[in-house]
Length: 468
Image (cartoon, rainbow, N blue to C red; front, top):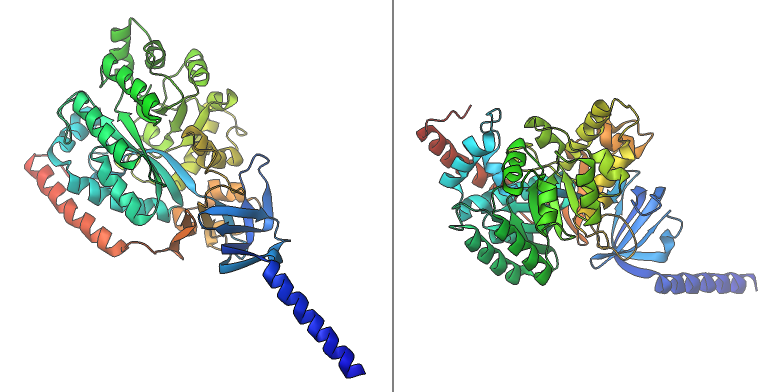
């Protein structure tokens, strides 16, 4: 009798386990035992949380008490590491990695050095080589989505597709002859073809990228604004960045600021993402808010070029859409958003003479959900929430520079390095695992970039310029 009872209990337990297994939701990836920074509306943090992914979407984010409810093809035990939304770089020129560290301290560098150098060396090959290198740098630093402005942007798109990242890619439009267009009208045609080719891509958003207000005519800026609304695509532009821009636009518009000018000509709207926005008055900020413009804040590049510090704290007080950017690797030198954290927090404290200004959580917001808002993509990326795209990073909290960790936001902003990112996941796919790329041969890309650098050295030396 006793043996029969034990057998019955055993069979019942087996049946319950089997039923439980059948009832468990099948997912593709389960991240558990994590310090989860959700960046959702309530900014929830789970100390022993989980994130479940099916296909390319997040299906659950929780405190981990429901762990048994999921059956995963693949599980990552975070062991207390930080799990957070992938970082979003709202402004760069990724292909310029191959020009990194050239003429770093030359005054008026854009016009005296960069434009002439680009005239000699920008090509499809240069764009492809530089973009592949930059993509790896960003992924290894936790950037899963980036917004780019450059030439031959269809080549950048191919590299994004190859590696598996997400990107908003803007084809540059400028009034003088460049590598892929003889004038601004040709640049627009190139952009329209690019938009048509990639308009339905799941991870690439094509865009217009007029270089700046002062390097394009009023008519071109108005045409692009109109076309962006017709094609439902973003417009990226350098805006309110320099004194030269203020002077040129002031003369063109009868004393208006670049932001006032853009509003006056009908080119300020919800499709626009303005990079830098350093020279902006309170009334300028009101216009940005009124027209729902996104802003890319590029601290490293701005202070390196001595152009000033964007009034971002005022922008945030007005609820303007602001995200962090690195600018191009010839401006801020790295494509690491994590490297921006420390400077953004500290410089805003300094210029505002307020130690409490720009707290760590606010910085992380600008790198995730704030950056998504700046790109008008907050419905799909920027936070870890059910239904959003599975763009996720895992940051090592056992590295010496991260120990001890009392506050994950503070640790990320004041202590973390880009190399602390252990795993990078985009669209539900693990693109970097334990610091190793999974979709591309990093060594091959580095060798290719080194080979192209030899061409750059030769060109610069033949031009009589100094490399060192």
